[in-house]
Length: 161
Image (cartoon, rainbow, N blue to C red; front, side, top):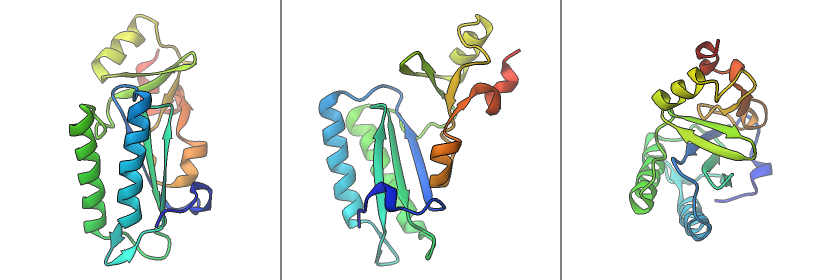
């Protein structure tokens, strides 16, 4: 059961799926429709899941599920994973890789594999002022306070000297 994103409790479960490339405008609409269809029918132990989603920066799929009263079943997690894998295949994108780095470069969001990102740090193309995305967040409240963070507040900060 889809609800407004703002009505999902702050302590609810959240997943952030970063894309290795920006979505094209027509893809945003298509992906949104596929996610809506999935979420409208999403069940956990035969119960509707109160949930919502956002697509941010034409690159991140963010899904929130209110699990504050009942934990999501393993089957509910599996079906969400299946949806994401289906989107990866259909749009030839990577969404499940949370180790690679998304960061801001001016007004743009960039995606680099860790090896390439380390090269950027070494060449000073990335500094201790760089904003990175912490895609490992797990509750909705963290989206506001711990998603877009200074690199020095992330595990990547130890790579910056």
